[in-house]
Amino acid sequence: MSPNALPARPRLAAHVLARRHVVGDEERVILHDLRSGQLLQLGPREWVLLSAADGTRDVEGIVIAAAREGAPARVPAAEAFFAQLHAAGLLGAEDAGEGASPWTPSGPAGAASPASPAAPALDPGEGDPRERPLEVLPDFSLHCDGSGSCCRIYASILFDPEEAARARALRPEVLGGGARHERAFTPERGTWPCAASVVAMRDGRCAYLEGEGSEARCSLHAIGGPEAKPLGCRTFPTSFIDDGESIRVSVAAECACVLASAGRPGGAPLIDPRLRARRDLDERIDVARLPDRAEVAPGATAARAELVAWSRRLAAAAPPPDVAAGLSSLAAAVEAEGLTGGAIARFERPDPLAPAALAPWLAALHERAARRAREDAAWRSERDLARKATQWIAAATFALAEPDLLAALLLSPAPAPDRERFYLRAALHGHRLLGALPLSLALRDRAARLVVARALPLVCAEAGVADPACAEPIALVEAALRGHGLDAYAADVARAS
Image (cartoon, rainbow, N blue to C red; front, side):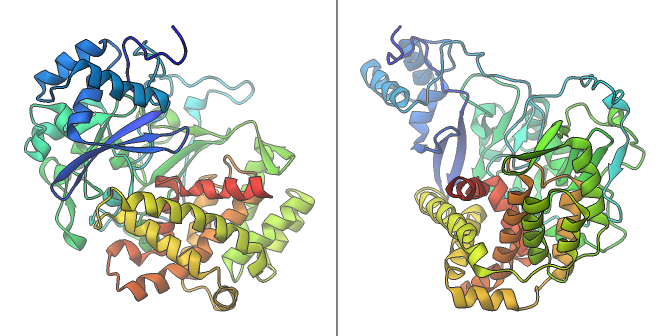
């Protein structure tokens, strides 16, 4: 078959995510191409036709299946529809299993990740990873206000088959999903049956979230208790990472409740205190693993053990008077001298933040946020928190392009220094600075995020916003960046430099 020819049994490719949204009274399905960033909006009838393309039917069979679901189409029109999708790179090979993988939850926001085997691979010289102790972020417990901000900001909320069936049984009236799984859920990837499903969203909210503002509550939790929620929701905002010495259990500062809980005793522990080692965790929990080596600065790497030791020293260092300035100075020191004690000294006694150094980071984030805001305006509800958060970030970064305003903001005391210190402490404990970016660039990225978070209250006040998610601007920035791909701005800066 020619590579340009329409597959005989078409299906949506594994790199395309189909997400159902109900905006007001209108239902639409958005296709997200993870490779190109392209978005394509479909109506309900088009989605019925595409959802029948699971890799087992030819076009004529797809038309017959769609007609049974109340979406009649002519074969030539269907062929033209699939030809357009194929030309856009949205269709996969005929083998419906290609690209499919087991699933583990990664929190309300994330795409699924391949499941860890029941017995993690042994690391030579490091012992059995199942016996590694769980090292929980100290002096932190979570006070969840139950208002559901985390249920309103993310792009995908994942359910495994049992969780989806339980949700439909508890709330059969939601989108008419009681007897029809496909009314409330779409496949996590592509269109063939897979292990994970994604719940539909109403005005950017999980379909199972009820109520407004501070009265919003998860209806699954209300009816069936916490165990009725999917595992990703039950474990959020906890993160797990194997650093070769222990399983670091930390928290993602992506929810207002996380920042509001800092320094408040008496909340819920991140995990059951009876859990001691990795073998005690639910095997479906995704435990990320630090690589053997990671980039410290462009072109320079360090071994995992060295990075872990350095991270512990930094966590024990005296907090700087301005965390964003400390991160920026630390980045420069790491680029100049690596993971030395002198670099940490620069963190404790930082130079003032320079507007010129921040400018390219803020400009790149503005470009990403403004483009996403334009895209969101074409299909997201005006009530959608994700749409509003992106608009606020675009507005904040646009305002900070004014040198005098940026300079004045940097000269002012940080509005919430305790929150910023906790944000860094949680990130260090969870090794969240070690990822796709070299460490020095990740430090600059975090400094820029904190500056944007400092500007957000000005934007929200000017717009007269009273959303509870705005109570902790750092969390709003973090959730929007990770949950909607805006964090790719940092890679834009790296490429430009």
